Amino acid sequence: MGKNFDVIVVGGGVIGSLIARRLGRAGRSVLLLESGAMGEQSSGAAAGMLGAQLEIHEPGPLYRLGVESRSRFKQLSEALLDETGVDIELVNNGILRVAATPEEERELKASMQWQLEAGQRCEWLDGAGVAQLEPCLAPHHGGVLLPDDGNVLAPRLAQAAALAASRVAVVRADEAVSSVVKEGSHVLVRTIRDTYGASVVVVAAGAWSDEVLGTRGLFHARPVKGQMFSLRPKPGVRLQRTVYRHGAVYLVPKRDGSVVVGATMEPEAGYHREVTVGALQKLSTALGEVAPGLADAHFERAWTGLRPMVGTGQPIVGPLPEEPHIILATGHLRNGVLLAPCTAEAVASYVDGGAPGKDWAAFLPPEGYGVAAGSAV
Image (tube, rainbow, N blue to C red; front, side, top):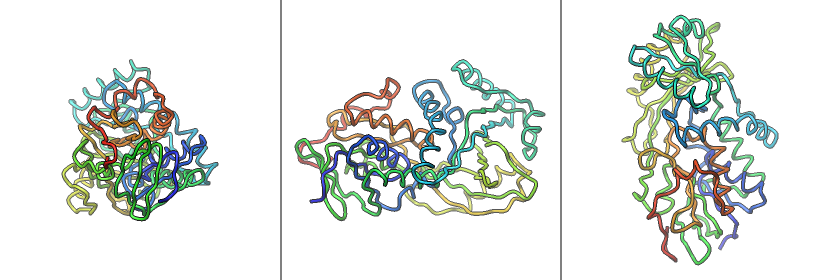
């Protein structure tokens, strides 16, 4: 049998890597396992938006955690650069939510009101203000500027997180987990190569979490396919802020001048990662409606990501109710990058036997996620 560890983390995306880094830096012996290349699934494919105010549509625990996690990125960016030499290209450029119809305008103003009441910054711009801010956009009824939202370059974040984890933990890519088995006070993790033991196992395997635990259907982990592409505007044309129209398209400008255009939401696509003509046509049409000034931009590439969804779409983070040696950190859907820093801290608290704060209580695994001694989870 392979070596015993304090903690085994299953899943080498941004969340799993940051968890391993956090625990390793705290002095724990950690093994990080990934079935393929590190960060090649949803983490590396993400648009990288830090949309705490954009993506979360009502006040409550998830909104507060999103805002808190967003605030950690400056420090995280600097720390990862120091530890790995990789710049995750944090851009604090703000996000502009545009309204193309009077109904969308009313919805944005209502959203703006509760966010102001929650103590966050946002500003209403009329149509002329939107045009002045981003000249390449089509005429709009107006928009809400969220100045504190931003973005990172997701592939670099995944790379930096994995490298940082490898400095303080044992990292093994291309080593798929075949079973997780409870045996006495320990948990055994069997892979295609060996068997490892740990006091605690953290499952951060995204849409593959049910498969890792051998509990297919228990908490309904599944992928939501997202297709997107990148373009490069012609010389003299530059999008400054992330632009988002609900239900249609988002445009995420990167530091090098390219723009990520996304993304479809395909919950019935399963694990298929093909880029389809229909999806690119849909995104291109929406791009032309929102930002006709980018119509003659150069097409660079297209790709897909498989976002992890569990249950009704809320994350699940915390120990199994009947088996505290198994901790879940999955189901972040569109907010995995945003919530990664706070999720790593929350999991570290659970590993230490504590509680990370009352907001996380809303995302604990439901009752019934038990493990029989001596059997696969």
